[in-house]
Length: 297
Image (cartoon, rainbow, N blue to C red; front, top):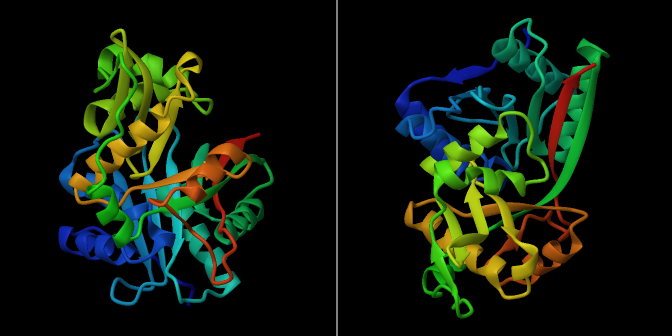
């Protein structure tokens, strides 16, 4: 008999899955996403969660976000300390795709650790060759309990004279934020507006205008930190990040972020920052998370 996914549908089991995923960095994208589903706090991205082989002894979690404005998002996570047969995993990926997409050929984004992304690519090409993909390779940074406690006792950085902390105005300033994001595409303006309206964000202003900001994705990761050119090298990026850390912790969630492997300046700064821990293997080598976008040819 082929492996079969179990869809988690009850509130009780969603909470169980949320608690289990919170124990594993590999499943870091799941807890906040499940929270938004339970609380109906981000209706623009309804969530479906699947588990294999069962909720009591999980090996794999699968998530589908049927986003209203942007392409659907899939997330895959293997529970640490478990092993998966490759053919078994291929069967699960085929089943997952069938259950969320049916017969539709739909562009989508997949988020997973590198070895799972490779297997997803195999599954995609086994089903059809009429696909093309783009990969964004990232390092993942999270906070230990010690780092969270340190962050809570660390005051917000002072900003230079004339600058001040504030909030982004979602409807009036979403376009400003969205226009600075190099990965923005169709529907992202509306998605950005929803993020700013419903989730924590941070902003620093100068002369009334937003000059530095950062927000949270509905999967929980920090998203689109940006400082305008004329206001750089003043510590504003660090300031909005610290503000967002405080806001995330106040909600009871663990801050985390991804940094592109080729963004050496930000990568080095994150490694050196005492508030962040880079996700690494047992030998201390950085693990790789991949954001993989698939398009129909």
